[in-house]
Image (cartoon, rainbow, N blue to C red; front, side, top):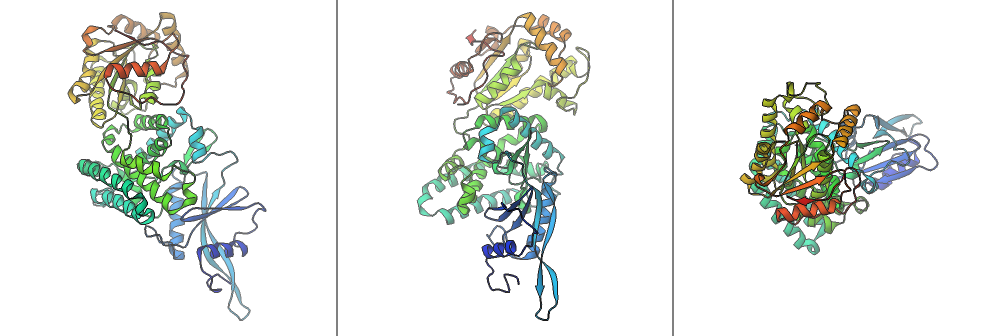
Length: 541
């Protein structure tokens, strides 16, 4: 007998009946059920079965068996793109039914996604956020960037990703929050509405341009920390959004904003920017940063909406007050400033730039990556070009510096800090980069790194032997750079900070010095960083 026949068709009773009927076969003695606002997940042994609840929540309708089957099949298709080892198939759940004459036959009563259960110790959600390391965040950003690059743009004529569809999604989230939170949150919601309405009006043309240029793609759609799992040394996205194409056919930066928001609102803006920089290394989508704050605000509203619908779901995430405060003012305290790195290969400038990007919450643009991007090469691709030839010819270097100056202006105009990581050997090269700050009206500083000759040679040789860095500098290249280097001085047109990277480094003092020089108070990250290799004390020249 099915729950329909028993007259007890409620979501919970249906689940109880399915479990009692043996429809899933023998379950482990210690099986358990995890519940979200739209699904049940039955955990048994090393297998998990994910079922859709037969509910209508307005933004999804799973009341019919056909709708639940379609959703399971879509979930399998979408998630095998990023997590093929987890998603095993769709299973038809059958039960024996009788017709009163003694005849009995099996009938399909439900569908479920069969998954490989996460192994013990696999970190998800808040646990993942607490243990996530800087290099893991960067690799996660690279993974998402590669995923987005391989997706096909939305076909012409599709409404997805249009200004109207983006605004409709924002309005729907606000309406749901109005309905579920009530008058006690009215002022906070009004602040959110004012901010995102103004930001959308400012960025409407941006949204239209992004749709036209192919930035709208069939993304994961629900890329927050609760849908990431650490498996061994990898962080893997799972549980892509299957029930509404309009919510996953979105601007790729809209997708990335969900992860950035979820890290930032938990107090890990440093990791958020490490992930964003890894993403930009792969995609080069600096133009998308113009819409970042719009999408961050929207994603905070989405997270708040889901939390308001499901207290169970909300327990693993940020609180409602934090989410609404973030939606009303995303990336609070992050102000545009240009930092130009300078120094020969092995001077520690790239290492220091990475640390500063996490402390200043800055976009980190590397000349080695952008040089290879000009030739459609991956960041770690090797060319074995001789000094001054191939992609390292003088005319190519001129193009690289011009490109970096343009990218810096793009980032600054998006309201974000930016670090330009290049040797910047000559005063003319530094002047070209600093012009980006002058023409956008933002502060700038040069950070010049140095080390003794023995240390420089050791660092360059070690990096070349490891072949894990975009730089292809050799000892010969280093010698040429030392001969060409023009130390920063009074002609720079801005303040400079000089660092001997063979000395211990106080990163907090360096961040403070940069803020003092630029006249911009900088909210330093609260999380520690290694301070021994390489290092140095800031001084003004």
